[in-house]
Length: 387
Ligand SMILES: *[C@@H]1O[C@H](CO)[C@@H](O)[C@H](O)[C@H]1NC(C)=O
Image (cartoon, rainbow, N blue to C red; front, side, top):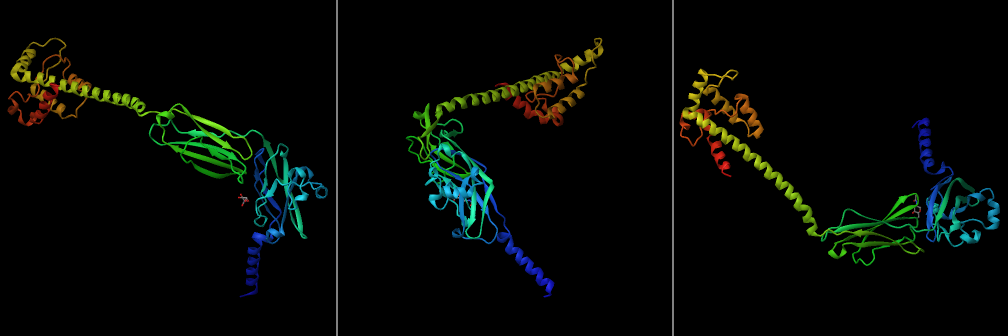
């Protein structure tokens, strides 16, 4: 291998070595603000980096101090004013025994837990790393503001829809908290069912606990309150409830019956329309059959001789048959369609017109090709007409 090639490889090797460790800066990532319930605990998420090689826990020292003392660290050391220090005696009296690093410094985790949060803990805190006999750094730009509050928030109790007697119902009770080392407990009064507990980190130092209760509602549960009680570490319990309006099965019938009734009415109405339409057809066929008895041809001859002024030309019997067979081939229309079709060929609907013969007259044979296919329809008409 040529020497430039070797140099290139060496550079790559150096870079690979450098990227994760040697070339890192002093940085810290701390959640900027966190609310802490007094009496409970708070864990302030914190990660940090430092230049140079990766070091073990024992080679690193982490400490937390109040932001307002950031320019007087030597004084802090003399006056024991840290809020966290490895050596407890260096910690300000009011914080002594209440603070600890829950993260592992070797893993660059500087998370701080403050236990039994007090009113006066409301302040701004910063982290500092020291690598003994080597280097030290205060991350003055990555500090956390802790705001304390006294009143434990009520849990949120939710469920979807009203419970139905006899079918499983799910109710959820949810709270957020900041104390994963001493998590609040959620209970459901005297319910004997065992709830499912979900606990998850929702970021920014907050955790969410959800207690999911599934039970079978009974009649006796109607108009009762289902209560979820939350007990934060070191606080008096706080409750919240939902009122249960249990729908009994009969109640459901009250909903189902009107729906069925409405659908039924629609079906009956539709059926009536169908019957009316068939009746129209039957009437038409009746009118036709009268024409086949010779009335139409006589009438036609009469009107041709003696046509009233303004009256339309009458159709010839063959025209009429052609119309009727076209008409019958149409899909079953509504009565209004029939009306239109009828009027278009015959303005004065009341005048009797001959049409194809009805099958119950024995003239079927005289129109075998054109009207035979309608015989079945007519038979149906009679069936429905008698309804
Ligand atoms: C730091 O440590 C805390 C406590 O063990 C843990 O909850 C958190 O997830 C850690 N953070 C990271 C970034 O690993």
